[in-house]
Length: 193
Image (cartoon, rainbow, N blue to C red):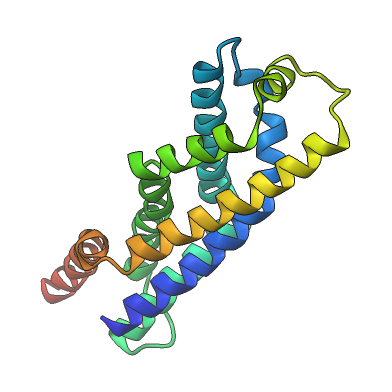
C-alpha cells in the first residue's frame, strides 16, 4: 500500500513536469480551436489545453517509460523478486493504462475545467481572445507575457488538482483496486499451475 502511494507520488511529480513544460506551447498551438464568441473561444481554449496535456501524458514516450518502470517495480516489490516472469510482464501494459488514466481523470474534472476557463477569462481581453482565434501572428510581447503568466497559473492549478486527487483516499482507491485486481489475477493464475 505504501509502495503504491510512493509510486503514485512519483507519477504526480512527473505529471507536474509534463504539464508545466507543455502548457505554454498548448496555448499557442490550440488557436485553431477558438471561435468568434468569447464564451465558445474560452471553452475551446480550455478544452484544447486539457486535451493536449492528456495527449502528452498518455502518448509521450518518456511518460510511458516511467509508467512502465513503476509498474515493473510495483510487481517486483509485491512479489519480492528481481526478475519478472513472462506472466508478470504481460500485465504491465494493463497497469500502465491505469497509471495513464489518473491524470486524464484529474484534468477532465469539471472543477479543473472551470478553473482553467476562469484563468483564461481573467487573463485575456476580448481582443486577445480574438487574436488567438484568428491566428494573428503579430501578437505583442505583452500577449506573450500574459500567456506565460497563464501558463504558470494553470500549472499551479494543475499541480493543486493532481495533489488533491492523489491525496484523496476515495479517488485513489479506485486505482488501487484496479491494480490490485490485475495483480490478484496474476497470483490466481500462478496458484492454478
